[in-house]
Length: 118
Length: 115
Image (cartoon, rainbow over all chains, first blue to last red; front, top):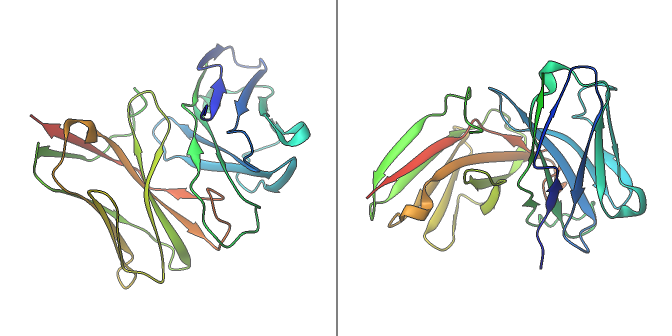
């Protein structure tokens, strides 16, 4: 079974441009999460989808970031316009189960997209 | 690599020895803790988790210990192997969201297994 896949693996864009990152979760996983690690910092939570709905977007840094998960399958994270401080590695993860479950189920992470804004 | 600029603490262990990686957390409300392993070029990989109603949990070659009094978490790896070389992160979760909702990650520790 394929794991969580992210595309592209690397992206280099100029300040002010737009970039769209894609995440394909493990098939059947209702929960999808976006995280990022900007240079010199810890991995930080961005948001959590349950199917197509945003369950928790408390970690989204500002309105330049837009995440979507139309149809509850793959998700995209758009940064528009990109700024230098957006450079880092963006991770996506997915897990089974309804979002409100009290049972903690293992989340599987993708390999990440390394974004460099110049 | 991804660790550039992060200045991770490093733990160097002889192959076959046991290793202990420590993590301090700050939020006493956290009730779920996870250890992740991240190899170069890959995303974090789940190793083991523990809930706050437990103080110890064992897996295959790994043990997680939780001391809620001092807000400390540790990961013990027995009989280390070259494949254990990686960056290890602890993560905590407030509430019972499950999965990976709203995890707070630690800075990470770079474990190096010496042959």
